[in-house]
Every structure is written in structure tokens, then in C-alpha cells.
Amino acid sequence: MRKLLNNPRVVLPLAILALLWVLVSYGVITPLKLDLFNSRSSSTKQFSITRKNPEVSVSDRAVESLIKEQWLPRSWQRYSVIQHEPFVADYIFEEVAELEPINVVGVEPENIPVPKTAEELATYIVENLGLDEDGFFVRFGSRRIRVGEMLGSQMISQISVPGPREVSADSIQFYTSQLRLEATSTESSPKSAQISESYYLEGDLVSKSPVLALHRVFTGNVELIDREGRIWSIGLLD
Image (cartoon, rainbow, N blue to C red; front, side):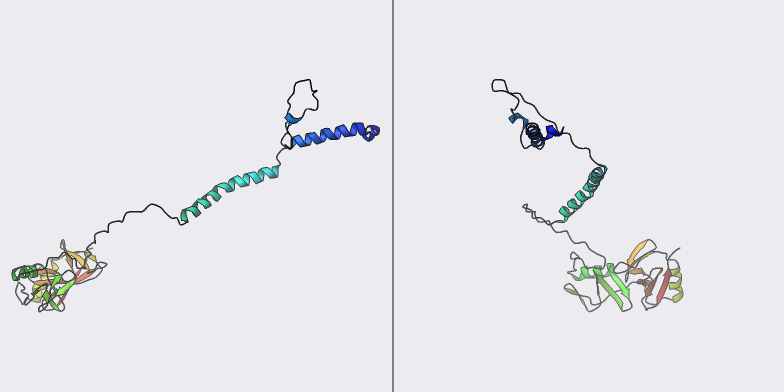
């Protein structure tokens, strides 16, 4: 055996075959280019060598599994980053029409008709009459206009209040005992309350005979004020 391994005629062909096998296995040369075993007169024969893939180790499989498990969260992270990146659009959007203003309670709307004649002013005073600790006023939006002040182009010279001027305390006490406070709203501006199925803002007349107006609104009760400035309280129904 040692004589064969020491013989160049045996070692060199084996080394050449081993070298060719390695070159073919790694794709350096293709089997189609080899024509070692064919003579010039014979037809060219093709052959190929298939290299078997080495078995995958347990550690390689674990790494592959870990990569697959991390693919989904990484994809979501990239998608999230893309969603938050600024971009420039070539499309020019049309201007959006402005929303019409919403009239809020206590805010003076722009479309309130202003009385232009004495007759219109008299009607407006009767329909928008109010009372507070400072006396009678006319409500115009969120404003409280009193005698001697201007309402549009008309001056309020007097405010006529129906009903008797003097009313006994017993009569007012009996009247207020018949009223039912059903709900209050302390978050609105001005505050409001629902009394005997009617809705009132602070300062609105609740009754014209006797003259009583909603003075102040609290969470559980309200205060009414009469023309003499006396306060009457009504509690919220249970």
C-alpha cells in the first residue's frame, strides 16, 4: 500500500480526480466542459454530479425558527415607521368649505332681528322681558339691555310689567309651592332649569302674575326673585 501511495503514477491521477470533483462541486467548472474520457472520434457524453446538502444541525434549525418568529414583528415595526413618516403629495386638495357657526346658549347670534319701530320695540320687550337683582331688563342674545339703553336704533324708555305691583308674601309662597323643579343645568351659559315642563334661563320670567324670574340655578335647587327683590327657593324633585 505504501508503495502505491509513493508511486507518482498512482497519486497524481487520484489528486487530479479529487481536484476536478471539488471544482465541479463548487461550480467552478461544469461537467459539460469535461471531455476526459471521450476520444475525438466518439460523440460527446454529458454527465453531472449532484452534491448532497449536509444535514442541518439542531442549532441551525433553532436559528432559522427564531428568524421566522421575528419576521412578523419586524415587518409591523417597519410598517408603523412608514405610516408616521412625512410625505409630499402631488395632488392638490380642494379647499373645504367652512362650517356654519353653531349658536350657543348665552352667545349673541348674528341673525336676531333688531326692532326698527316703536311698535316692534314694544312687542320685543314683552316677549324678551327678564328680571334680576338690578331690576327689569330686555334680553338681546347674551346682553341685558335696561331702561335708557339702546336696542338697535331704538332707545328703551320704559318697561311695562303686567300684574299688580304689590303682592303679599303668602300669595307668592302659595304660588311657588305649586311649581315643580324638574331639572337643572349648571354647565350651560347662562345656567338654566326646567320648571313645570317649561325651560328657563337665568333672568327669564317664570310668572308675570305674580312677577317671578329665575334668579340663580344650583345643582339641587333654584332661586326665584320677585319684583321687590325677595328670593324664593324651589328644590329639585326626588
